[in-house]
Structures are given as C-alpha cells and as structure tokens.
Length: 77
Image (cartoon, rainbow, N blue to C red; front, top):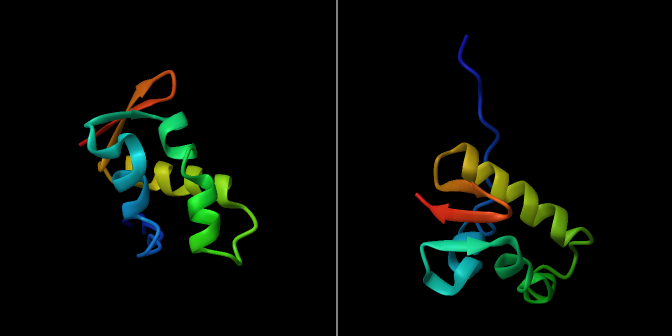
C-alpha cells in the first residue's frame, strides 16, 4: 500500500521558497524566520506562525523541493 502525503496549503507553500534567502539558492532558518511578522500580518488568524513555517519547510523538504544542508541551512532543489 502506498503512503498518502498530506496536502500542502496552497498559499503557504511558496513562501519559504520565495522569502528564504531572497532568491538565493541557499538560505538559513534565520532568513525565513525574519519574515515571521509579515506572515502573521498576511494570516491574522494564525496563532502559531513559527510552527507553521517549520511544518511547511519540512513538507517541502520531504517532497524534494528543499534539501537540508545541516546547521539550519537549506538549498532549493
């Protein structure tokens, strides 16, 4: 039986890719978390922005869109 992947939220998925490193192929968690306030403003009902960023980043990694380089550094795949 094949594992079923949980769907990604369509409006949140591109944000780590767009805001992580401002277009550079490699970026850090600090680069992404620097936009936490902007995400909170975009999604005023979201009470847990940082955990959502982490969740979406992990989902992007699991789907092969991001590669984890270690020590909080990621690379766009």
